[in-house]
Amino acid sequence: MNNSTNARVLVIGAGLAGSEAAMYLARNGVRVVLVEGKTLKLNPAQKIPNFAELVCTNSLKSLDPNSAHGLLKAEMKSMGSFIIESAQKHAVPAGDALAVDRELFSAEVTRSLSSHPNIQVVELEANDPMKLKAQFNCDFVIVATGPLTTKSLEDWILKEISGDDFYFYDAIAPVVDADSLDLSKMYFKDRHKDIEAGGDYLNSPMTKEEYYAFVEELSNAEKVAPKDFEDWKFFESCLPIDLMAERGKDTARFSCMKPIGLEPDINGKWPYAVVQLRKENLLGSAYNLVGFQTRLTYKEQVRVFRMIPGFAEASFIHLGSCHRNSFLNARKLLDNDLKTKKFPELYFAGQITGVEGYTESASIGLYVAFQILRRIKGLEAISFPVETAIGALVNYIMTIEKPCPSNINFGLLPSVELTKEQRKQDRKKVKKELVSKRAQDVFQSFYSALV
Image 1 (cartoon, helix red, strand yellow):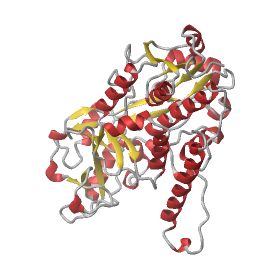
Image 2 (cartoon, helix red, strand yellow):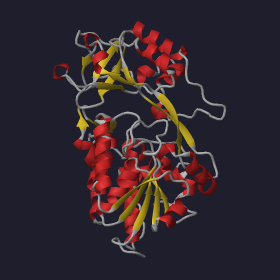
Image 3 (cartoon, helix red, strand yellow):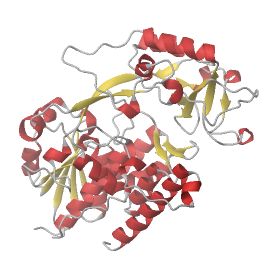
Image 4 (cartoon, helix red, strand yellow):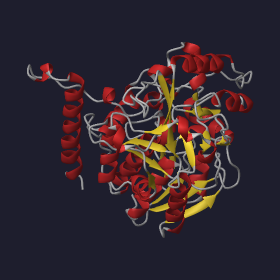
C-alpha cells in the first residue's frame, strides 16, 4: 500500500462533503484530484459556479454545545474541519446559529481548495468513477456528488451499485430584498430572549385572521406539478410550507411559524403565528424566509407571500423551487466506513449516503476522508462510538431498515437514565445536558487516543 505522500485520492464533487474530504486529505499529505462539473453546467438548484454552494438556507444551524447540531460542529472542529473553519470566517448574525454569507463562504472554499499544492482541480462531468480512478491513477475514489447527482453518474450508480431507485424531493426557500420590506410591521427578536436586546431574526407577526387567510391561500395556490415519472417524496423535517398547509390549518403554526419565544411583540401583543426572516449576508440587504420551502409557481409565490405583514411591496431576489435528491440505501450497499461492498476502493460521502443537512453532509465527508487516511497508513477502519454525534449519524444510516434521510438529533444518540432527583427537574432539558456531556467526554477520549 502507498504511504500518505504517494497515495492519490479522486474526489468527485466539490460540495460540502467533497470539499471537506479533499481538504482533510490534502492537509494530511495525500494528493487529491478534485473533479467538479458545475463550472461546465449548473444543475437546477445551483446559482453560482463556486464550490460548497449552499443551495437552500444559509444556516448551518445551532452552535449551542447542548444541542445535537452544536455537538456535531464541536466534533468536526476537533478533527480540523475546513468547512466549519470557512463558515466561521464568513458568519452573519443569527443568534445561536452559524449562518453565513453564502457567496463569500463559497468563494473562500473555492479559493482555498484551488490553491492547495496537494489538490488538482479538474473541470469534468463524471460518469464512471472506476474509469476515472484509472484515468487519474488514483488509489481510492470518493463520490460526494450530493443529492443532485448528474443523470450520467446516477445511471452508473443504478446499474453498478444500487439497482434501485434512490431519491427524495427537497425544496428551496425564497429570498427577499430587505429594502422592499415595510419594517414598521415587523420587529427584530430572537426566540426566548428579552425584547430589549433586539435580535438577529426579523419577525413578521400575524393575527389569527391573517394566519388562516394566509394558510388558505397556500393550500389553494397553484403548485408546480410533478412530471409523469415523478413521485413527490419529501423529507419530513423539511416540508414545503404549502404542503404543511395542506396537511392541516395549524400545521405550520406548530412548525416554522410557531410564535413560541417571540411574544409579546414591540406593541405588547402576542402574535397567533409568525414568519421569521434570517439575514442572507453581512450587509443585511437580503433575507431568507425561514422554513418557507415551497412548490408554488413563481407567480403564486409572489402573490401569496405578499400577504405576509410587511411584504405588500416585497421584491424577491430569488424564489423557491423543488428539486429531486438522490440517496443510497447505505445499510444494504456500504460497509461501516462507507466504502461500497462491490468496489472496495470506492467510497460514498455526504448527503447521497442518507444524511440530511449541510453540517451533516460535511461531517460524513470528514468521516470518509478520516477512514481513507487510516487505510493509506495501513490501519484498519474504526467505528466512531454511537454516543458521539458523528458515530450516531453513521450508525443511523447503516442500521435504518427503510432509508429515510435524517439530520443530527438527540433521538439518534443512546438515551440516558435519570436519577430520582433528576426526574423532578425539567426532564427534557436535563436529558439533553447529560447526553451532550456524555458525547463530549466520549468523543474526546476516543479521538485523543487516535491522534
